[in-house]
Amino acid sequence: MTAAAPLGWQQREALRRRLLSLGLGELSAATVFLALAVSVVGPRWTTHQAVTLWWALGPLTVVLVQAGAYWLLARSWVGRGTMPRPVARTYRVFRVFDPVLLVLGLVMILVPGHPDPGPWLLTLAVWTFAALEYANYFLVRLSFPPTTWAREVTSWRTPRLVRDLRASDREGRH
Image (spheres, helix red, strand yellow):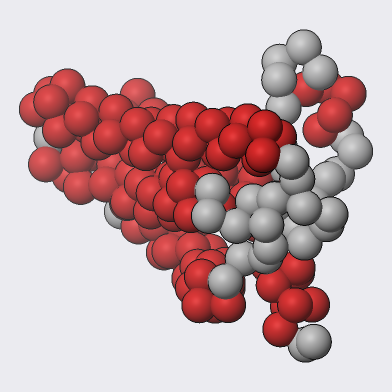
């Protein structure tokens, strides 16, 4: 998705289908997490537990929606060029905003204290997943097929989003 040699029509369409799948997958994941929180977990937890859960779900939802939007937007430039500068500027803001949101969420989860460890641990797991999703998109690629994950994750690859941001920077300097 960088400005390498243009792809042939079939290669580009195959990549566009994959990006569509990734984008819709991330948006679906956000929807499922929200639906489970509202319909299953929230009604069973105390108000305090539910509010604390939202401090984990909020950042997770934000990151998943950003990721889904990125994959869907990338369909427009894949195999043709680079990420448009306004999109790149937006994702640079997300790159700074998301860690602030994650830290705020973690503080709001840890500070109040929790007498019941079950909901608290589940909330921490959701927050951890949000932090891992952020890392996967903005720091180091963590997502690989299960059969190659152990081997691939140790290669410390640059995430596709970061490569697109860098390509947009290079394109903007010319």
